[in-house]
Image 1 (tube, rainbow, N blue to C red):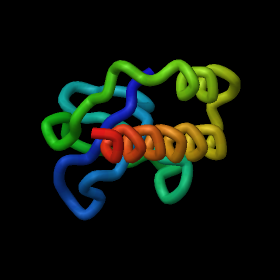
Image 2: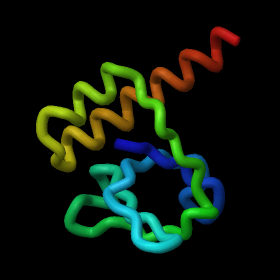
Image 3: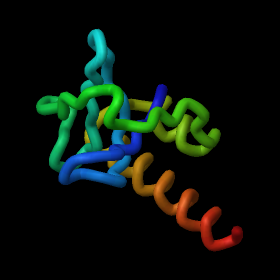
Image 4: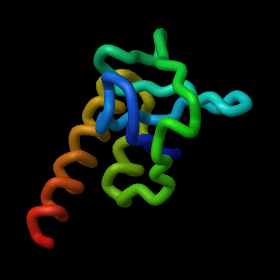
Length: 88
């Protein structure tokens, strides 16, 4: 499981779950406007891949992957990232 952070476009700085990869494109979902039924196709060079996810995020996604759990995992990850920035 990997997350991706958008580096360009109108969705810059948004986090997504990487649903699948095809050639140099990624299909991304966030559980809200980009659901499992309608993933966003984005060029791989326009995102930053996040391979190492905290254990609590992986635990959320390990249960069942649906739009609600993906949304919850991304929200928790964003909180962790913002908390770590405040400490530094």
